[in-house]
Length: 278
View 1 (cartoon, rainbow, N blue to C red):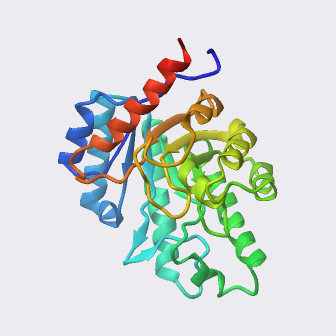
View 2: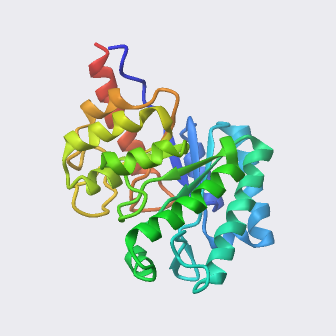
């Protein structure tokens, strides 16, 4: 079946040498670094740059830098009001600029979350209403899109802000021309475990998706399961992926120094691909 693209081996790791070493032994097609606030000290930035050079030399030039999820135990939420959280906002923008500098220097990509979920409502409640909060986030994403150009992408959440699974929300996102990262589990959870809605979202956004987080889920909470262990219908998902996009398996690992669950997910999806091509 020509409509089915061969799955890429996309692996994710922190910047620790043991994690990078483990991933590189599989010769991944795509490598995503999950950064944290310690990577943005002078020493941390030097280590991250070394790791980028290392992965480029040993494995692949398809590298994504995932913006840090937390700063001083708070989520790096764009919706957090600057007048209440000035240090958080400062870190969000400074760290994004640091990553984009690497992205332009090494021709790689930066991934930023449009929103998260756990503390999002706490921040939304600081606005007069949800729509004001949404527009604040869109305004900042517009700014970051202009700053990052062809080196930045935005990932969907399971919060009331910047999510996939609803045509009207997706239309607003598409209208702004963002380069998109599509997390299958986030969308599936937002769709309350409805595979049909997940498939519609994949088709609707396909032209602007540049990167996928392939993750299984039971569709009820953020569980980040190995592919084949949840309720996502991967046989129907595989033909809907943008063939020009990269992808990684963003799976919960039992040991951060062993990509076992990521590799098992790739084997599962590859078996579906092989069956579909017979």
